[in-house]
Length: 366
Image 1 (cartoon, one colour):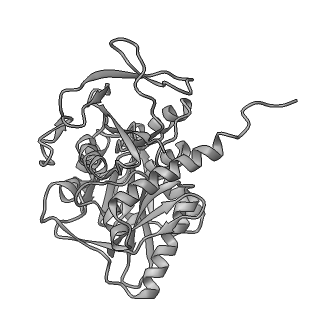
Image 2: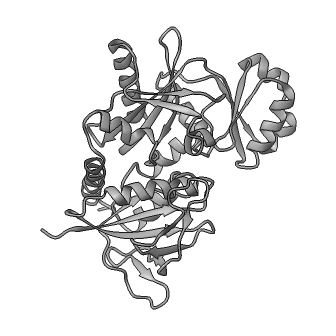
Image 3: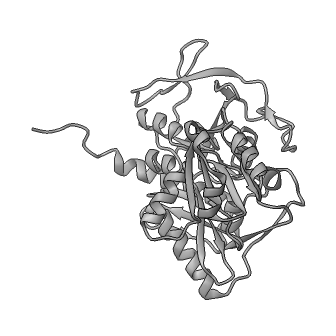
């Protein structure tokens, strides 16, 4: 049987560019070459798309601080509306070898927010991970919280602030509603970029100013005291949920440096040391959140476990990290699903969803 050609799309014009490069490296290394051929498409920090050589696509690949794209082979573009030969080389207009499925691992803006998913949908290309609406809803923390709250799932109390409202904000009124400490977060960023924990008005004002440098919408939420627990979810109509993992922090909160740079900032415990009843409740909550947000393929659900064993959902990540220290693959490995098999399953789920949606009617029959 002929092998399928998988395009790994990575990089991107986002604050999580370097995280994406780290994730891509591991996915590329673990792709089952007995089943799949490979095409590498990197997006630089200016948003330009290029094809890269498998043997030379990264510089400083083992350093999360300085990892970067190498010299590309050629610039590429997408032909909207095509159902084959969708990717072409700009230099001569010739099509790249036919791509059968895309694994997008562009974290953050333009890749995890439905933007890239919409582009791939327009060219009728199967792709790994949730669809447009699910990606967009999970990327926006404000929208995520509203949907989860509406479904009866516990979230941290919060308010949403738009940048044009900044002069109308009352610190004292927010503290009256939400208490202290507070977390201030850009609504549409991941990897803890732009997030601050604040304990007084000076910190509040500085944090708000910084958050608005990244987004026009910011959420202010109560700090939840509890253990940070994560679950991995995998599948389409009948998703499975992994054992729980725990993040044990040495820093004030799980910030970008703690996640990807500082080896001593946090410890990952897989599986988490939790009694069976509490673990089951967390896993069932993660599964319900996955379904409420209509996720497909994969997502990582992050929750807080309070001292009285309440489960409070923090966020849902639809393109979780695949770096060396990322929780998503570690959780599945703890359940007996190895990295290579996980990648294969994700591709199979993408193909299955595309097969089912491709037969839907697109014309109104009168």
